[in-house]
Image (cartoon, rainbow, N blue to C red; front, side, top):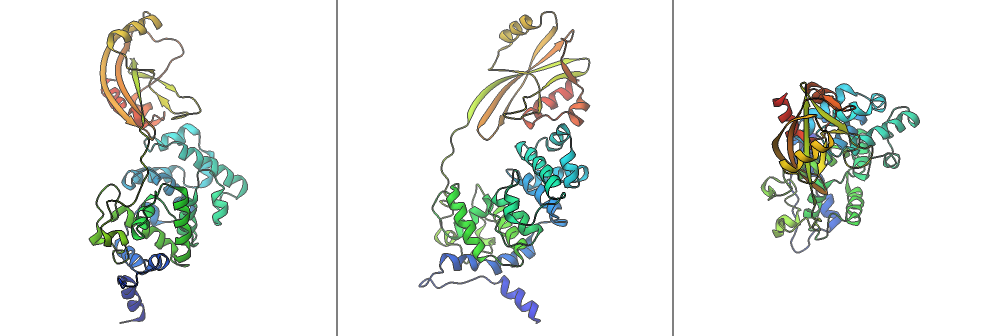
Length: 374
């Protein structure tokens, strides 16, 4: 057996500890390295952004992956890279086209900050992402996790990338019964991880921790402890605490907002309007609507008062619910056929809805409905 094979075998072995002299927290984290890297070498998923981990591709993928599942991100990432292959093209993209490329991913401030940062990079860094962690942190939309991911994955610098997956893994390994949503807990774990992570191979190390959290130490269910490379050092696994850890403070209940969606159709097109430049879904397009839940009679009376002589038919459509982070939209829809179109309205064909105007995913059910109507 060669020296390299011996090293690989050693790295894949679990770490055992004597119950009479348990590992300290630091040694417990340090002991993760060998089993973690060995597991990742065998189990790492093939993902489009891993095929060519340039700084730009790493950055865009990490922003897309915030609050979004990997499988959902894949087609968006490919399309984004095809149309905006570098920082210069991202900086120069028209806002409507940028939002259209992001349409359906949600959390649209992510892509606005992406472009703000791109423009700073073109202006001050020659169109390149800086290697230094501190400089990355100063860019819009980049926090400690994203800065650590770019620095380690793209540039090979030993900075931790602690996201929700990693917080869950570390809290279970160390049996931390504190709120992992606390910024102080996250900062402490980042500092402790930085002390023990390898100086070389940090890209694989960070991605391995994220991968264990995504595939084994899963959110919202029982972890697959029998498949975990960290089982020999994980205190929560040994002590049966997985259902108590990680600890999270209860979230505030979301506000429920009733809305009536108005699908004005005429000549094979549907009316849309642009939302304000600030606030929820800023600068996106939407179907006109009313605050509150209107019944057919009340709506008919209101529309006839507002646009007398234009309304040919009002027909109830489907209801829909869309959940944002802090609010839920409970929507009731109506298809309203017009005899004549009021001045100043913007109408779009199904093709234009698909290719030109960015509409948020909240309206997907109504977009599908309109595609069948027109």
